[in-house]
Image (cartoon, rainbow, N blue to C red; front, side):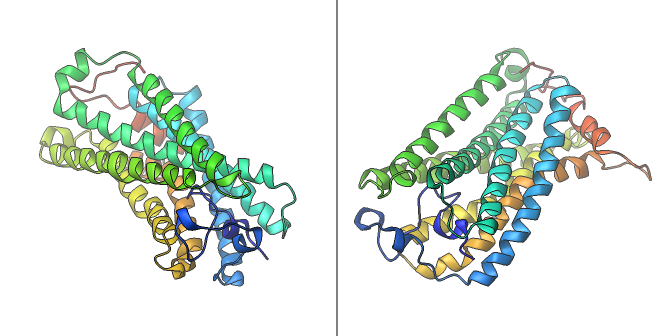
Length: 323
C-alpha cells in the first residue's frame, strides 16, 4: 500500500525530495514516490496513528466543548481553547489522510489532498505559536505581577491568538503555495520560504518557549506559596516538554532530509510522525491527570478535573483578567 505520508509530508511543508538540496532539486511525480521505507512497517504505523488521532479528536473535542459552554473566559482558558482547536485540526486532517492512504493506493484528487495537508501544517504551526505565547505570558505574570494585574490589556489573549493564527496562516500559505501546490516546487522561492519557516521556529518561537518555561519553573519551584496553586504551571511545563520531545524531532528530521545530509533519515519518519499525533492528543490527558492531583480516593470525571484547573483561584499577579 502506498501511503500518503510517504509521498507528501504533513508537517514539513514540502514534498519529499531525494539526494539533492532544495535549490538544486528536480521534480517529477516518479521521484516523489521513491522511498527507502518499508511499506509493511509503515502501514502498521498508519493504523496505530489513526487510532491515536481518533482518540485525540475525541479528547480535544471534549475540552473545546467544555471551555466554550462551561467555563468563564480567562487568559489561560482562551489560549487553551485555541490550542485545543489547533490540535483538533491537525488530528482530524491527519485522520483523513490516513483513511485516504488505507482506502486508495493512488488518490485521484491531488488538489484536495494538498489542501488537507495545508490544514495539517497550519494547525501544527499554530500550536507551536500558541504554546509559546502561553509560556511567555505566564512567565511575565510571575516576573511582573503588578503589571500583569493592573496594566495588562483586557483582551490581550484574544488579540494575541488572532495574530498568531494569522501568522501561521501566512507561513503555511507561503509554504503551500511555493512548495506543495505546485507540480514542480518553485526555486529558489521554496528554499527561501522553508528557511524562513525554520528560522522562525528554531530561532524565535522555540527559544522563547524554552526560556520562559525554564524561568517559570525556577520561579514557581523556589516559591513555597506558588506551589500550593501550581497546577497551571505544571500543565504549561508538561505541554512544553511533550511538544519538544514529540513534535520537534519531526521538524529536525526534515532539515536533515531536505538538505540531503542522509536519505536514511526517512526511515524514522513514520515513527516521528506518529509521535507528532501523540503530542496533539495528549494535552486532554495532561489536563485530567493534573486536575485529579491530591484527590483522596475520590473519583473525578473529566469535567470536574478540568473545572479544578480552569476555575482555580489565581495567585497574586494572575488575577482574573478577561480575554
